[in-house]
Every structure is written in C-alpha cells, then in structure tokens.
Length: 353
Image 1 (cartoon, one colour):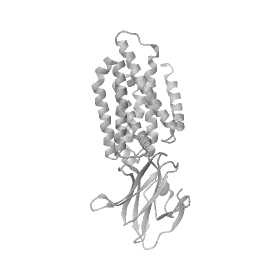
Image 2 (cartoon, helix red, strand yellow):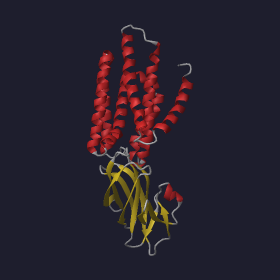
Image 3 (cartoon, helix red, strand yellow):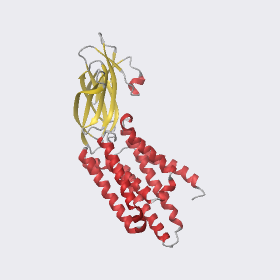
Image 4 (tube, one colour):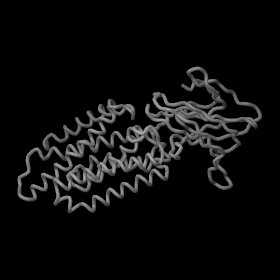
C-alpha cells in the first residue's frame, strides 16, 4: 500500500468524483443518505478498531498487517463527508454571508489529504467525526421532521451528541488506556465544535440546508399563468446582470412597484415558510433598513424549486431583497439600485421557468 500510494490516491480521487455525481444529486435522495450513513459506519468501526490494535501493541501484542487499512478507511470516510458537505452546503450558501462556514469545510477538505498522517491520532479523528456528525444531522433531521426552525436545529445537535456519546462509549470499552489519556481533549474538541456550529447558526452564517435557491431576480412585474411564471424586465439589462447575479439598475417612474421572484428548492418531505425581506440602504445612517417583510409557505419536491414572488414600492437608492427562512437564515440575496425616471424604460416579457 505504501509502494502504490500515489496510484491509489489518484484512483480514489476519480472514483470520488464519480461517486459525488451519482450519490449527491439531491439532498433528499435515499442513496444520498445511504452514502452518509456508510461514512458514519466506517468511522464508527475504523477509529475504535485502530486504537484497539494500538492499545494491544502498547501491551506488547504484535500489530496485524491489516492494521494499515483502518487509517485509510477513516480518511476515506471523513473525505467523503467533506466532499458531500461542500456539494450541498455550497449549493445552499450565499457566499457573502456563509463564507466563514464554507472556509471551515474547504480547510477540512484539503486538510484531510495534507494531514493524513494525523488520522492515526485519536483526538484528531474523534473531533472531526463529531463535526461530520453534527453537519450531517443539521440537514438530515429536517427531512425526518418535515419542518425547519430553531427547535429542529437544537434537535439535530442533540442527535449528533447522542451518537457521538455512543461512539465514545465504544472507544472507552475497546481502547481504555488510550481513551483515558485523551478523554479531556476529545471532550474539549467536541465542545468547541458544538459552540462553533451554534455560533454559525445563531449569527445566520450557517447555510440554510436542506433549502437552496435555484433562481432569484428583480423585475418590473411578475404574474402567474397556468403552469408558468412570466415577468417584465428592462431590455437594456445585460446578460451578465440577469444571469450572473450582478446588481442591476432598475428605472422606475414615481409610484411604481418592483417585484422580487425566487425559486427555492426544498426536499419532498419538507414544508416551511419563506421571507422576502426588502431592505433599503439609508446613506445618512449608513445601514440597511427593512422596509417590508413578506412571508409565504412553501412545500418541497419540485426539482426547479418552489416559485413565489413579492412586491413593494421602491424609492431611489440601493436596495436588496434577502430571501430567508423564517428563522433568519439567508437563502438568496438580490441586490439592485433604483433610479427614478420620467418615462418607463423599454421592457420585454420573459419566461421565468
């Protein structure tokens, strides 16, 4: 295994990329959770067995040759977690709000390779395993309960803690000496992870997984026709403005309303409430002021996302519409600028589906 390490690593990278495409297409697919639960099982077995072997070796019992499999298995499972999390949390995140959490995931993804020799260390792998358990429970529990909110997030943390507690009991049974030497560092590391993820959640940094924005935009009008949504958009807006999410300038006559449109993907089993929070930047106070907040319920299951829109009277200046969960987690942000004009700008009707 040492001789062919580079070839094994390259093959694993290719297999992992294919695996992600097959198993991580949607967050609510059964095969997605089979993959994550497999990673849980691998860590649950490989970490305690490795340290059971090491504890025996410290008493003079020779290590078996297959011992080398277990650090690799741990690295594979943790790497699978980080890969899946980057796929799903990356889809769900608004970079400007969630970049600290995404930065942690990216660091763990690359650190899983760079620090591979540390996968033989009990504290290192145990704390990373708890982080993985918690990050998985955050979007798995809402799928089971069919709703989102603070109590569901707290329940997710409780489930992760219980599973990790069982894991710790197994460690204490099979590798008592090693566990006693590291128990306080494991607890401190797990407590740090618990505090960090709660900090991310209650400061609205954590991406709102399992929700994700499929599309969002600002228009002069939006209306529904059978099976579709149409909108009027300014004809002089560039494709970059419209499709790359750059902040457009909306030209409005006095008394005209603007419309915010969003498509929010939600798993089949989940129902929740979405908020369109219209905010205007007050240049004198130098802060964003909420002008109106419009809520509507959504149900999951549609690949393209649940479609909805809201409208408000927009005064000149900088604006943004935050598309949020009822708990304040940011799903999408639509920035734009309003300029008042005497005559309506040239407009075209577009299909939003």
